[in-house]
Image (cartoon, rainbow, N blue to C red; front, side, top):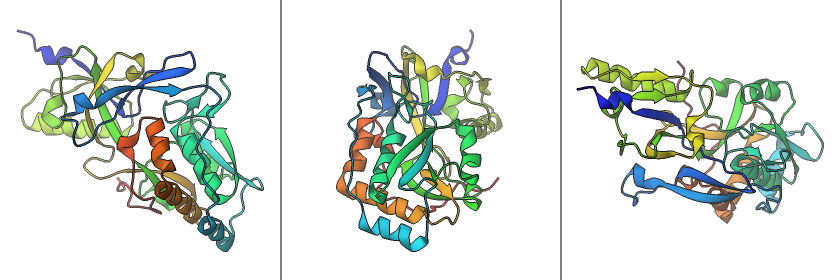
Length: 305
């Protein structure tokens, strides 16, 4: 009898991989889990979001400590009176274009707006390809990046970071798949798995695959595609894990190292955490499972390879 597990297709991707529906709102298939959900499969839910240009974003008052930190550090914005922030509008609900195809919206944009508010600056949000942000920060094109950037020890050589989300990854399967839950290495043995080349997801999957092969289990069948299979609206989440597995990974706002900006960014984020606006933003975009209790400056990053 053929091994039916090998016919099962699995996508391993960021938990924020979603299905987008037009018409001004979106139904996102996301992890909304907590310790009381009773399993990752039950943690998947559908939430409706505003995709119009009229976002009515949350705001906070200027944070005196954050403003004072900028003044003490001597930080000077690229454009006077503005905080120029880069984001990559290609992964809903993190960042995407509104239905006018012009306005940048999403979780990362809303958090950038709170940071700018706290610093007493006007937000100047700029779209960029994700691969281009390092050069943009180093060349002085952007003050800050809020675009799902994972903190690593290697990146900390060049950039300062203020954490604002947990880095969660998820296993997605077809909505009618017989796979109920993926929680450990043996659960992926013999499966066809869609994964992005060169990503954290691939690295973790390869480590699990090596463990399985050493134990005499069937190897993973790797599938590489340019598009994200989780965006077809016909998937369900069956497992989550930290993006730095077995280490812990943080998502953070990044800026040029030692330019004097990051302390103020962290203070602004922490003010929004204490005030509740941060939690409202994550709830608004279905990312409450990735919330942090405090923004840390340059937290421990993923180790050097």
